[in-house]
Image (tube, rainbow, N blue to C red; front, side, top):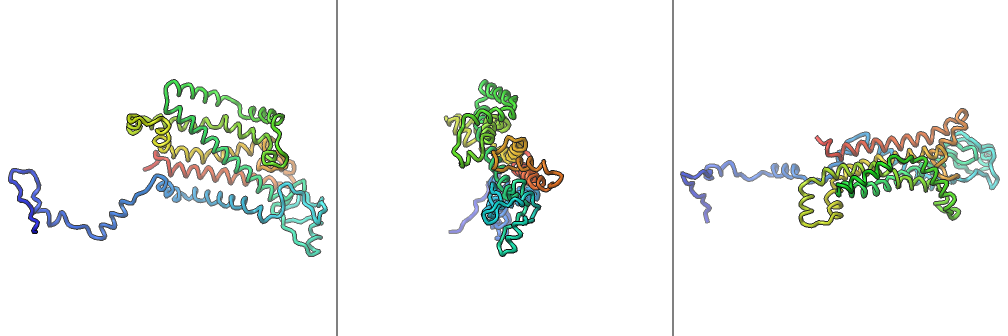
Length: 359
């Protein structure tokens, strides 16, 4: 059946379609369809942020450095025959001459053993004053520092996110009381609390010999407690500030009007819109926690000997700084690499995920 365009009424304001069909309503070409597909490519907030992050050379370089450090500290102990607490010996005889060896240097007893046809794994970073391989101690010290950084950031994230969400969403007197508690916590001296907790826990807690908690010691447990008690207040304030502005939006009012519970509104509507602040703050909290742990270990409040930490290794290297300066160089360089990489990665995450910085 022939499709005829109806005639236009002379008094009507409608367009005369018979005059425009020839050039205004032509079918799109294949090239135009492909262009439309490219232009309408869908993406998510995370994908868009990761695409921008990968264009930041400093952030990518930081991820490569951190990836190499993780690979080394995970797989190096599988190939190195020494343990972090092991005093070097040859054929069951303690090697007293293996004290303060330089990198890739062997003691006289080890040289005799090699000349007799034996094989000996090299001391990559030399040995310490107690005849222990220094490279494996730096590896385990890096493990301890990274584990402390990650667990501390998780503790800060969970407590700060819950506290800041409740305070910012409820507002009013509840917010005022909760923020005054935060102000009080800000005034507490964290170093003094760590020392007091270490003394108290040392008399109360008794761990099974050889267990993980026994190797960490009460100092590290008190450090985790202080992170859970004090260090979350910055995260709570950031999330509270975000929620105070987000909860004024119309979709929050719509969720309230249909009777959505408070927990669901915070979980499904508010926190996802704070994800950029959460990611950035968590990434920047890790180097802060690592530096805090290294500093406490440097002053003798870190892990319990013989478990090494980068801070305790740096403290032990001070005594022989004039004769063995490289002993301080290795743990200090590792601390600098980790902290600098996380800081650069945090800056890259902020540039990629912070909506305020989008052009």
